[in-house]
Image (cartoon, rainbow, N blue to C red):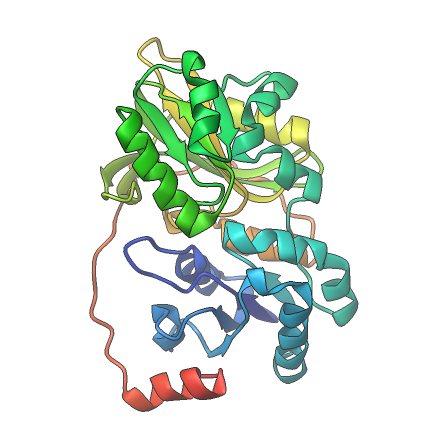
Length: 346
């Protein structure tokens, strides 16, 4: 087995979970990789930091908003102690910082496998209409706005309900102007500007998790339908689907964009069985372990691609695999919390 030290973020395995823990579970399941896992935490109470059977060591890292240099300085310190081979950032909000630092990380001896800056920028929610025209994919009409007054100027282009989206996370359905104003203020306070107003498309939401090799090839793709959704819009249950048209659409996007790394397509299947692309998340989603259980260990494949290996595409996946999330009380001691909070290491 190949022995590696892998650094990962996204350890907040809570009601709106990050992908870090399920990505780690996929790596732990690998029969090819023998990995030491180094967790990168932003908060003292990220549960993954205390899951010692999954995470061998955890370090606090500065927020992406603090800038590139503070993050790189911290990573140099961690790398000196841990000798990280592969680093997997799992939050949208940190990807830009890591992509800008990719060459520096490579010089340090840390490998990543991330989308290019162009791939990352052009699939932004605010750019999605242009993305659809460029690649021949149906997308809902949308407008990025920087103030409520901006929406008033575009009011004649929309019919209520509309979807109000943050630039990184969060989406709400507004049925009137009052709700739109409330959601706009809520999202702005949390994620900043712009806020995206998107046409509401009636239908069933379905998703595809996928991995591209950066050369136009789809290494793996698994479609899923959410069977239980939380009040935050997060999947708390889902089932793998047999749907060649979803795989075909995924292959089309990855082939045209030469996508590099993990991705999630969020789609609406309309009543006439057409697909409307409402979002592209530029990393593996939190339900990635469903793909692992269905026969496509995408976290393992991502690590191998980062190491420069030739990875063959998966041939298929199990249909009808179901995931159900559940709550679990993780017990730890105060001294562990104090160690992470004061020393920044656990």
